[in-house]
View: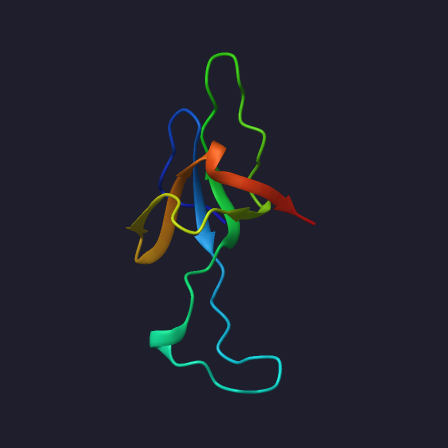
Amino acid sequence: MSVNFRPLADRVLVEPTAAETTTASGIIIPDTAKEKPQEGIVVAAGPGKVDEPTTVKVGDKVLYGKYSGSELKVDGKDYLIIKEGDILGIIG
């Protein structure tokens, strides 16, 4: 997946995964009650800092803090730009 955006330093561009629309028992969750997603796929990553190269790579599924980063729109799609330090871990 190619995006016309290149993060600088230790910033990472993440495409958030869609929030769940139903519970495990089949109850539909309305938009007003949905929680902000906390995981996504890394779409682009900066090179890192001078002594600390970026450890995540494009395609990694990551878990990040609930209130991390800034939302932005690139080429009509919603993304989140966060510092690598706000990423809690790589899933899978």
